[in-house]
Image (cartoon, rainbow, N blue to C red):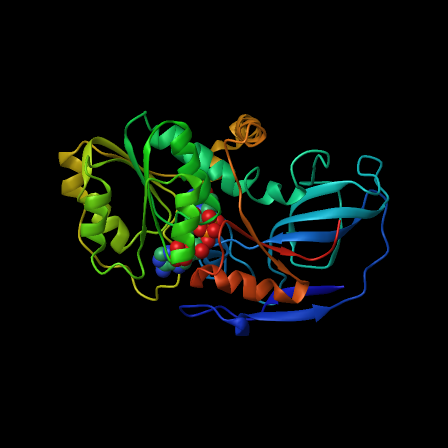
Length: 332
Ligand code: NDP
């Protein structure tokens, strides 16, 4: 069975040089253990942070150890009655073709409803991030203007659609014309290609004639600087991600937004989706319902093959994905 290890820590933008493939024999199962065959691997922007040394909300990956993250796997051999052969599970698991595990931290998934891959996307971590960040922090009201940066990604596509469900005017930023077209088709009221628009501040001002009531920030940097100039009184900002800074080698520099936040009585709140762990069942239930009712769509970019995992991860920083980036490792 092959695994992917962190070979060394990146400086700035990561590359294939940070990953090493290793092959090992699968050990025989002990009592209580299961053999998991990896079906889908999630690659996520937060993993870039785990490649660095130092303290964060989640410990760093260790050099020479397998990289791990959200994985959907099938139990193909079992010495554990609670996880019989054929069970499909979601877990935080190593980037390996096969993994021997006990039953701790493995969540059996229903296989008779939404595609199982959705439990890494709409019905998993990114969907829940959109749900709680938008509905608990931004709390958009009908007729208000919501801006979402990184709008064409796993989190952003859900944020925009939820804001539409709540009756808001939705403005997104994304990095290609194809993404702009896709988001318009999803019902976004205006979408700005931040890579080709010469003056983002002007484009945003035109797209938000009534100002900005809610900002769901996935990206940070210059896009946020422009949004902060448009905030209405009592605006709410959900600080979800800052991907434009993840590969930075120096502290980010920029305008100081505090006076603008103060004058507008803006609420700015950072959050990590796990803050809402106790309410995950509520979120999955609500998202499933909107999916069933046809009110939510979900796009996936699925790369095939275990050996493609590093490239799929690196592609997140080049904007190669629309919706959730996954790697399909084996057929279910
Ligand atoms: P996405 O599916 O949005 O993938 C990342 C996207 O970011 C790319 O497709 C790319 O799209 C965009 N991007 C990459 N580099 C830059 C850059 N320098 N400037 C602007 N955009 C860039 O990922 P997710 O939906 O999984 O995550 C979105 C954000 O939410 C990330 O910042 C992530 O860290 C954060 N997050 C936070 C969580 C939390 O608990 N707080 C949980 C989950 C995610 P484009 O073509 O538009 O450039």
